[in-house]
Length: 154
Image (cartoon, rainbow, N blue to C red; front, side, top):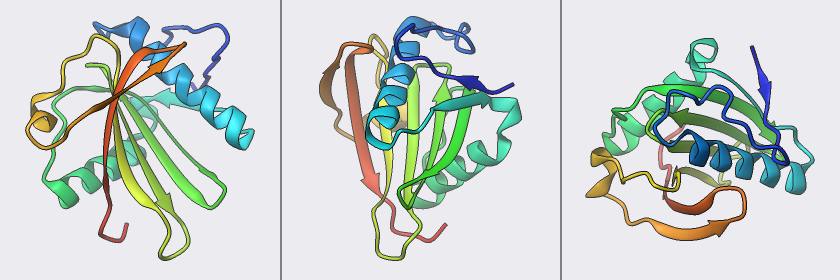
């Protein structure tokens, strides 16, 4: 069942099995606030079992672009379009959030972003490949993030 993420009253609904559920909920709420403020988009997520096509697409891009396989279990996912961009998000049990921003127009921005919930260690599959910058968020504490540009067509 889809869940509208509330960034005013942060909830761990759907994320309870994560050891960093509160921080992951803050990270998810931070994303919801960004899309509401920038695009007036309501950020809605579904349980991973209800969004296999999103998880498969994100997994395929990670594997084909950088030979990355995420070891953590996906908890939630969402896909939507805003302002000419197709956005895919997957939230993992470990506290990792992965988003794929894919411009619908040829030659536009296309990238994969990684964000780590406060208190989460950098996953082994990413640690040696990426440097993570820190940013502060009222909703999520300290978020660490990194990204790479997508080169292929998906």
